[in-house]
Length: 112
Ligand code: HEC
Image (cartoon, rainbow, N blue to C red; front, side, top):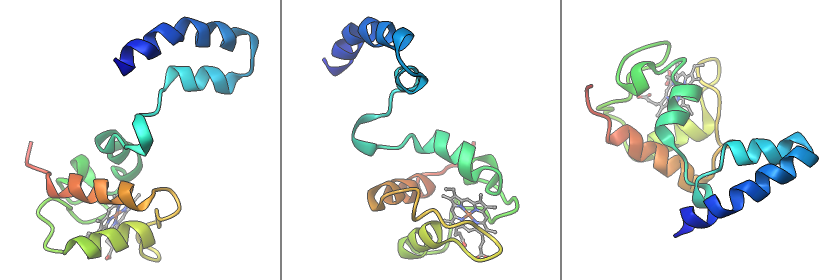
């Protein structure tokens, strides 16, 4: 139902974007998922994959995250706070619930 509504609005948005600034067009091109929900797989590939290889399944510059022996709090804190000289802090980039989502993703990792 929601998707239908967006589809109906699309021509309007696209039309408007021809007349207005680029940000409107960027929004139409990449709609954000509802209420701040992350596409963690995509996010991970783009933001974390540089150091955590194969979606977190393998060792890279950072440790393998799949089957991590660390507890959830440790993972959350590491993502939010990073580690000096090793990993950037992401506490300013993601909300608490989004970090929970990332931890869930890590816990659900399976070998490909
Ligand atoms: C610049 C490289 C780099 C990037 C980018 C990076 N990490 Fe890390 N990450 C590391 C390193 C290095 C460690 C190990 C830190 C240590 O020595 O305790 C680590 C540790 C972790 C840990 C703790 C795992 C463990 O067993 O110690 C988690 C969870 C984690 N990273 C998640 C993420 C997520 C999620 C992202 C993206 C949002 C990300 N990292 C981006 C380098 C990176």
